[in-house]
Image 1 (cartoon, rainbow, N blue to C red):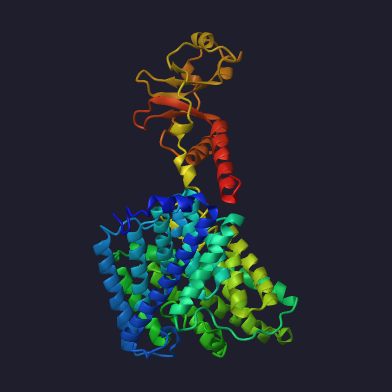
Image 2: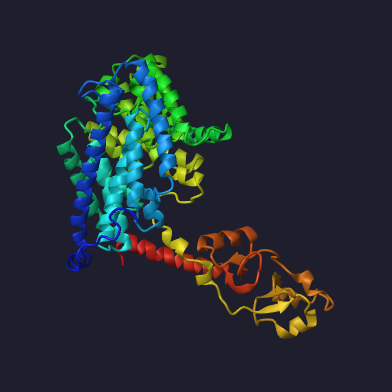
Amino acid sequence: MSAFSGFEVPHRLRAFIRARESSIILLAALAGGLAGLVVAGMGAVVSFMHLHFFGLEAGERLSARGSIDPVYAFLVPCLGGLVLGLATRTISRWRGTEVDPIEANALHGGRMSMRGSLIVAAQTIWSSGVGASVGLEAGYTQLSSGLASKIGEAFRLRRSDMRLLVGCGAAGAIAGAFGAPLAGAFYAFELIIGSYAVGSLAPVGIAALFGYFTAAAFTPDHLGIEAGQMATIGFRDLAIAGGFGLLAAFFGIGLMRGVAACELLLGRVGVRPWLRPMLGGAVVGLLAMITPRIMSSGHGALHLTTLFKLPVETLLLLLLLKAIAAIVSLGSGFRGGLFFASLLMGALGGQLFATALNTMWPSLALNPDAYAIIGMSALAASVIGGPLTMCFIALETTGDLWLTGTVLIAVIVSMQVTRELFGYSFATWRFHLRGETIRGGADVGWIRDLTVAQMMRADVRTTSTETPLPVFRETFPLGSTNQVLAVDEDGRYAGMVMVAEAHSSEVPAVTPLKDLLRHKGEMLLQQMTAQEAIKAFEKFEAEALPVVDSLERAQVVGMLSEAHALRRFSDASERQRRALTGEL
């Protein structure tokens, strides 16, 4: 039983909230405020760990340091990885179900495990605190959305309101983490809720604002990304930004595949799961001896006014080392995400891109600082998804609307190329690797609840495979039915007889019925979802298929046609669309 399970507010208060659509705004404000506290609290714990584990001065950021003691750089992430591995193995028996906010909204109607969320947040804090190259944003959104989900459960909110409140928690977390309420709101719309509706604007917007103000009130350091004044962007930059968007997509795809490849490699060489974080920590520690800027989330490194002053060789080295560190950290089992890492690497790549073009064609006179902002958003759009989220991060970082328009071009190209060539963001790629098929936060859980047993027709017509063809023709005249299911002497499904074919003048009356059987061994199970059934129809190229009790017994219990399955699927989809857009 997870924390807070079973807690409910008094009936009168529940009735008040459920009876008024605008009341959800109050819960959204609460969720956003809690998210701001989560951001401030988790950030403070990680800063405390950095201060004591790496010998920093008060107010220093680990990833802003030019160098640190090599002993600390190597031993802290290495031993920290060992502790994480042992702790993960120990708590695996009682950790609860880990449900990502995207997965919760897509499959579970916004319901999340509080225990699982707390453990993920703790693992993320520890991973970043010992210097692994992971972002805290995954932990922020996990815990914030988990708290919002529990608020929704306490008020017994409807499925649509639960999903909205989970999005509000994530919006507050991202707004607080980046000091960007617009980006936080659109992060919720694009990635967590999976759709935009007028009715959800006020709750999500209020949650983002409350998350931003709460985190800012409790965090003395500057939140978000610092950038100086950008130079003017010209029309030619629109086309050049599109070209960079293409490169960002390729880099982003390589980054995501690299994490999966690292996991696969460690598995193939036989490294035990609990030892993998220690090995990953050792690699990160070795890289940190070169530059500690690759450690942790990279908030200290992504102060662009400072970053822009580094030599080109240093920027290139930092980009390569940060990519390796992020791949190894996540691939070896440290918890966290790629959000801030992709922003940092994109900024580095954008500046290097502009510098390289200026070297080859000095007449272009591109502004490397502006291309750092373009690169930051383009790479993050490829890895994280959420193109408008990344555009608003650029806008709220610089306040430059014309630059944001150029960012939009790069983001569109990067996002579209990633979708065409790869098809996933980092979060949905992780779902894919573990066998899930969801591509975002849009609610598809209802389609998994629609099973073949609910759609099938039970009054099916059957015949024995030993029935003589003349008897079959007399029993099933033309027009009586389209197909008849044939069963053997044990009652097992043997195949399907098409009535029109059985009555064909080209088929001799002495033809055994077994010779007319179609779709042998092709059947549906009662527990299959509508989506699985539709795939089966496509695979077998059948207009109808039998439903059996099990593959072993193969006793016919019904029949389902492709047309009926598609109609039920379409009807459910339309109801879902209306619910999301407020038409119901």
